[in-house]
Image (cartoon, rainbow, N blue to C red; front, side, top):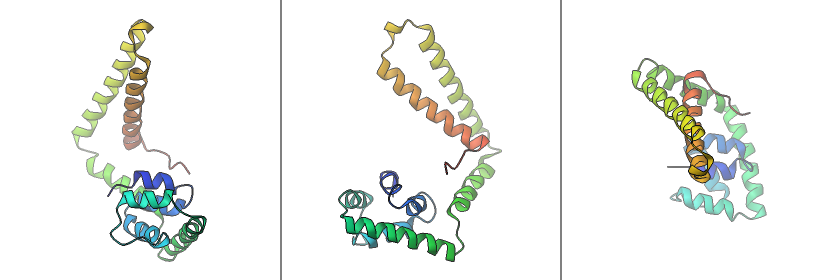
Length: 158
């Protein structure tokens, strides 16, 4: 299941459950959200997003309360979501650290990014479509940023 949209919608209302949706505890977080919004067990991620968008003030309050309960439950079970996420990232680095393919991919992406910046820079401004240039630079910049975070670490943002 894909929860990116739901995570974005829940991050302001129920940040602990939103964090849980992005990791190995997604199932528990989804069930908690569904219970808070009185949704059936077979609700899709799209149904969850629609329900969060259309939530009444009472349901928003229920989501906030469920988030606090979820946080307490994780503490009771001695589950630290940040630690779990960090362990997952470290495992990926350990698994692929000696594999040459990610390094090759990183070098190709970095060279592509720098090459594109160079090509856009040397062309006259009238020869470039600003929308396309911004789109490609944004995508390549995000790609290089993710690769850098994989190899050198990234911040949690909190």
